[in-house]
Length: 138
Image (cartoon, rainbow, N blue to C red; front, side, top):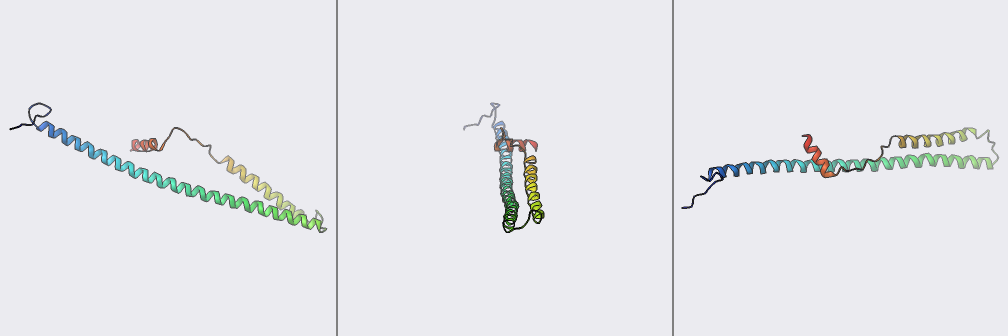
C-alpha cells in the first residue's frame, strides 16, 4: 500500500507534528485577531463617545455665547432706550458697567478656550497603526 512520507522522508510522524504546529499557530492568530476586533470595537465606542462629548461641548459653548451676547445686547438696547427717554448716562452707569463686564468676560472666555485648545496633530497615525501599536503594548 501507499505509505506517507513525511518531511524527514521516512514516516508520516513529522508531517503530523508540523500540522499540529500549524494548527497551534492558526489558533494563536485567531486569538490575536479576535483581540484586535475587540480593541477596534472599543476604539469605535471611544470615538463615538468623544464625538458625542464634542457635540455636547459645542452646544454648551454656543448656548453660553448666545447667553452672554444676548444679555449684553438686551442691556445695551435698554440703556439706549432709557437715554432716548431722557435718562442720564450717570443714572445708567451701573448698567453700562455690566455691559462692559460681560464683553470683557466674553473676550476672556474666548481667550481661555483658544489658549487651552490643543493644536491639531493630524499625522501618519492611522487606525490600523494605532491598533497595531496597542497590540504591541500587550
